[in-house]
Length: 200
Ligand code: HEC
Image 1 (cartoon, rainbow, N blue to C red):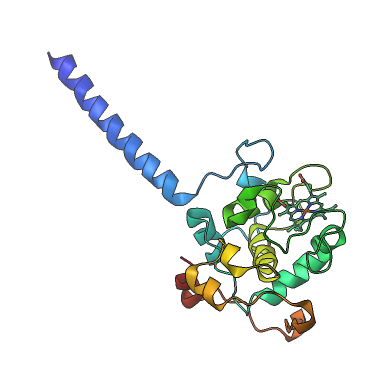
Image 2 (image 1 turned 180 degrees about the vertical axis):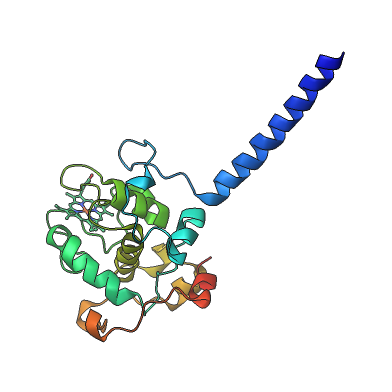
């Protein structure tokens, strides 16, 4: 009788621990998986630097990238894209030995979401598309992603990665009108409360 009571108490405790532990884990970070294999990504492979910026914390918990359409952060994203991606994907993501990234066609449809795009950049895909966690830190990946979203040239209505407000304001990218300042003339990149509120 006594032991039965105890075990019931222990079970209840375990249930509480399990439920709250689960909720905590879910709040701390989404589950990120490799684009090709579906295996979980180990985010601790990323460099320590850039791992706990406000933008990264928000992204890992929600999948929302506060740098998207944030004009103060696009110059840095562009700069990183030009050094890390354009050799294979083209200057403005028009495609080269890697596929175009500036239109609404995706080999891997999950790249339509920022979580999916992050997973492809972090963990790589096939062939030449290697994992980027050795070359970019998490914050830099979010900055590159914002630039990839910005040079989109197709119908904004297909840009499901944008919030409705961003979609309404979005202008198809035209490289001839690209006014993105060089990094040395760029404002300080700030993930403002306004930009965070603007994204979902
Ligand atoms: C060495 C060449 C190379 C570099 C550098 C490279 N990529 Fe790729 N990328 C590729 C190739 C090739 C593919 C096609 C892989 C596949 O289909 O599995 C690809 C695929 C992708 C895809 C999937 C596109 C789709 O249609 O689903 C994304 C997104 C992507 N790359 C983003 C990037 C970004 C962002 C960078 C820079 C941080 C980058 N890549 C750097 C070669 C490269």
